[in-house]
Image 1 (tube, rainbow, N blue to C red):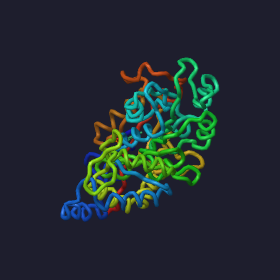
Image 2: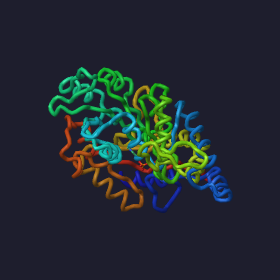
Image 3: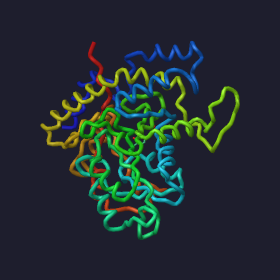
Image 4: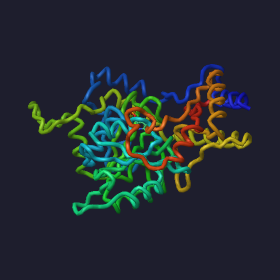
Length: 383
Ligand SMILES: *Cc1c(COP(=O)(O)O)cnc(C)c1O
């Protein structure tokens, strides 16, 4: 049966060679715009592609503001800073995520508090969140949400849209509003994904997109902060550019800033990629349909998009019955040049996050031993 899977994936990508998990495609104006940067010398912190790219992202996502930065992790860091996270605070997030989510929380001197993921969406579980609030949290007289067992403030909530499948944002918003907690969405994986026709990353105070080489579109390395709040956008822009006051020649920095601005050469690549984004999403959704149909025959669970959402299917995923079958599948496919990968180890199993506060993680634990990602690059038209 595993050999049939390898054969099918080879057929999809029409290749006898190594089939990567997710590789970028450059089929549009990438070379043209990059050459333009080099010819004009505008490769660094200023240049027209930055603005063009940000405008394209706003148009595509419906976000009021988009601030491009050097990577998704930096975008998360700045967003948490501007959301008001302070040293010693707690930030609620999911145990099943890429390590960058937790690292960005740590950069603030804050601590992640891990809750479970939803078994349908694979994103932050609203019922786990509800349980945390109802059982352990109080809003104090300053309007802060306090985690009673330690007396720490819960300063933010970071839901992550796993593999591009939107979390149940409506339920998460109701709960966080009730406890006065700002939301920073980790939409790193979900450019092109919508929940109830609204783009992921545009629900919270801020949302973050990654443009790393393995994501749906890439700038080499890069990230974007989405926000609907004009003041937040202004502050993010200012802090990402070393907090320098605009002036024709003078260097005056009015606070400790960051060098997080996306270089124009990366923005040029990203801009060319946004021109393909619509086609890419259609292509990825078609691949997911084909996978779904194929795996139905073998009684292997294929992760489909949650209700009321439209997913980009960034990484397609299978869920096996147990760890043993999963490991056999990983071994067979990788030995045969089809690069499949297990999902991340849970954050609570990593040395630096092992002692963090956590809720019941039943779904996360099950998925972490049974889920496998399978090749999901854009399928090129056969020529
Ligand atoms: C890719 C990713 C990030 C950000 O990654 P960068 O490589 O810093 O752009 C953050 N969170 C999640 C869940 C991711 O998948």
